[in-house]
Image 1 (cartoon, rainbow, N blue to C red):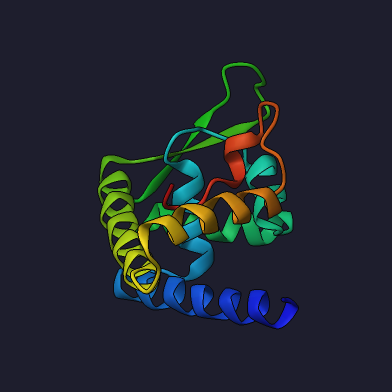
Image 2: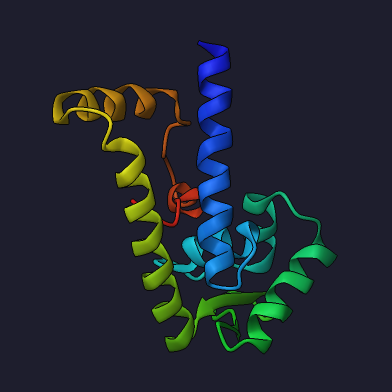
Length: 144
């Protein structure tokens, strides 16, 4: 089982990298956009969820900001904090990228019958960390 899970993760990561590259994104940039689809997290929260240090997170957001994909906003609750949100251009790119990833995953899963896909989805959901609390969507994938 371990070999199968690891090999599948390699296949999925390769597809994510391929699709992200089609949109001139790195995998971490695609993950950033995926997180920002339905929330406005702070820089520290983003860094924690992406596994980046503060300077790497700042660089990632700065590059996305230069491309017009995200913008920084002051937090209404903490004058020292900065929230990150998608711009309209970033939202449009995220939608296109998510659709391409969905197509890629659907192609991969097409080898399974509808019943097998349902079982696979149920089983893999059990392996994922539980989603609970206010940070539950912060680790949301680009495609649901």
